[in-house]
Image 1 (cartoon, helix red, strand yellow):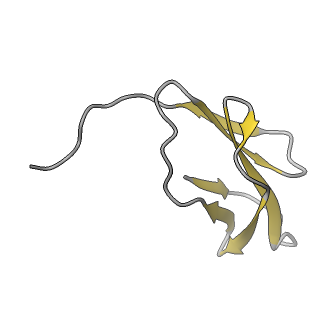
Image 2 (cartoon, one colour; image 1 turned 30 degrees about the horizontal axis):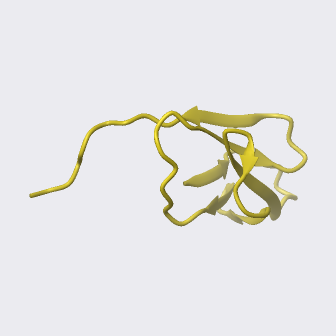
Image 3 (spheres, helix red, strand yellow; image 1 turned 180 degrees about the vertical axis):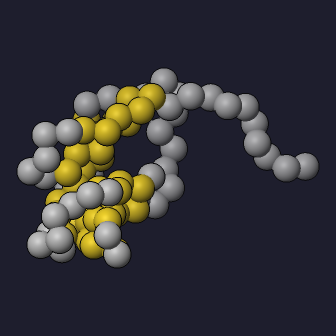
Length: 78
């Protein structure tokens, strides 16, 4: 899961970001850092299940990005 703030002010070099699953925070806040023109943070892989509302919250920003997880079938290669 990656959080990306696409248009931060040039003065912002880092910002706290948190991930929620169905409204429950996953771990603590993390520090997203500037990479080029964006501020971003990547969480390592985890199993969140199907039908879960996943949201990204950057501190000091009113907008929240959310999406519900969906089952897309078994993608294992045999």
